[in-house]
Length: 307
Image (cartoon, rainbow, N blue to C red; front, side, top):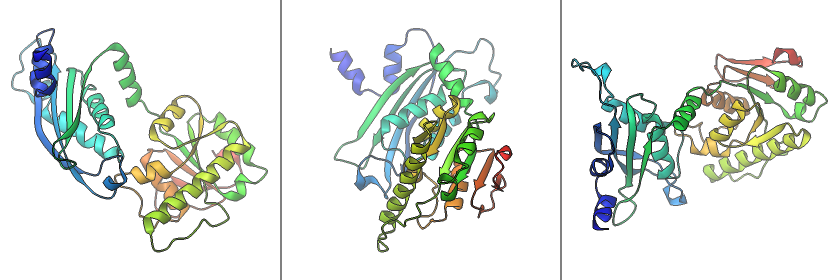
């Protein structure tokens, strides 16, 4: 019992050594501190805090000489890049989510066999608040990681209000359903303007985004093939399972590390930003013209064959 308690609070390297089954090599990154916006509480939004990473990776020993060649080993950079990439995807609420994503990215390296990830918030209380996870490579995990790497590149289809309420809506949805690539539909702001609170930009932003989401549900009510989704995880799942997703923008926009400006009210510009986030191969505007300089954006007419 004493040993278990000691290991529970020991550094991940000590835990790795104590629980190892087969001989292995290890690399570690300790006391890696990054200042970032993270957290589920409202007080943690709009402000940054320090979080500390301790990561230990167990790697398969090489069967032949390293020959002092950095390309033959799992580099420390792979660990720090996994941290940076996981933080840059979107604003996260939970350290648990961040730890999972860091571990998944590290385990993409063929040498990595098991990874210990400890993340602590340094500034949130009188002590350090944190989580620690252990993840090992398995056949199921390998299959899941391959799927993450094979996420499709969609077509983003913007439908103006006139199209959503018009006779051609079902034709556009049919064109999206039969397309070789997954299609994500974006809708316009409602024709009736949402409430205005000019003194509070962030409040107004939430109101505007929620108004767009109301319009997304209106579209979904017209055709059961359309599913309203608001997270990248749901969008990725939909793209891999032939689902026609209708984007509900609040979470992705508000959680974006490098999001659109708070004053953005131009829907075509917001759609182009979203297309970049999703690495879309094409953006099709129906009933409205693109306003930005996105190379893959183009204006569409009423011919569904263009999709």
